[in-house]
Image: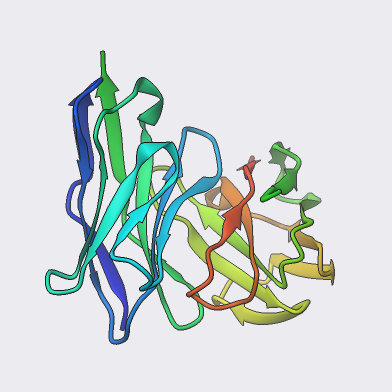
Length: 111
Length: 114
């Protein structure tokens, strides 16, 4: 069965410092993995997607994620946080016929 | 254009009312989804339509009734809801059904049941 664990429920960074949001997954087959972002009272926006073509995936707004099979991880990073990055982030793994969502990580960015 | 639209943005309804949520996409996607999201929680899948046919119903109460009139439209009919049904209702679409396909989400309808 597929599952996903987001290791931090809250992350707080200062503007201009790096962002690291951690995600571990479990899958009985080669998975597709996604990161979505949700700003307050908005829908979910796809940041990036891994589908085995390349282990380092670049997404929108300067985000990227690295697929590490040996560690079953898919951490999301950004070199320099911006105030507009403050939001809820969901790591998602492909199930057989649906998406499996992590619990979410709330990112706060301070001036 | 990767846009999914939803109407209305906000809806307040009494427990005896009947209302409908609407969702539309023009990306040529053949799978559409309804999710329910409570505050500070991830979305929960409710229904999946594939090629306009209901393929997944996640044991949702019958007071929620989905409808897919055509490949671009998805409705969710609401009747006799309970206060605990208050939530953000999200629509999504993907090229095909299945977990490997990225889903594009609409902005949601904020539903309050009084």
